[in-house]
Length: 246
Image (cartoon, rainbow, N blue to C red):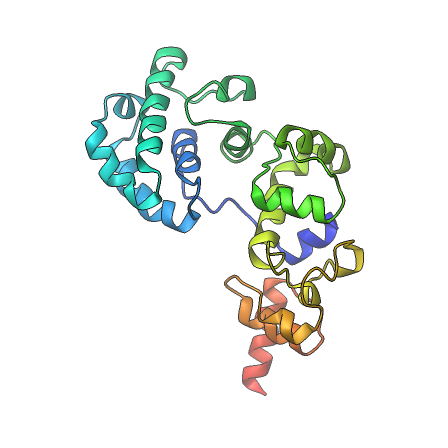
């Protein structure tokens, strides 16, 4: 399944925009209960106004709340981000630490955020257990654990350590685009052959195709509707081009 995930989601990546470990830490804190797209619409202004931990530490609460309001739970997030800056200045010289044990002591940073930062800003492999990851690995019977730390421990030995970070992105992409919480697109899923939860969603390819999301959803839907296997983005582009020229 991991091999097939790599084939169908070669574009999997962290969808939060960032340039530094600090920016990614802040963006990940802001991503709680909202979309990456929403966070990315807010962070350019935020990062320009607060380029360092010192700036976050000295930030005016009211001003930051105005900036963060579109992301939801803005008062809690404002408290976390300012507290993050203050903790980094007080304990780590204003720099984001590159160790899990240190990261999880920071305001607003739990294991999920810490693994996002380690894997994507420091290139230290980590498994990011968000709601999509938790849902899918349980559907696939990789584990029946519900605690994020226990899920990490259960899934880790199944996959080479060097692939932990990219695995997380692939699973999250699949959860967002195909294997939805309420109605997974089973009939249009490339993992159907190995999935013990096949049938939880519509198995008719045409019906399932309408549930697919993402930038290439239309092309994937056409392929599924005609009984073709789910393709990579490059193959989909070629298929779409062939249809247009026919």
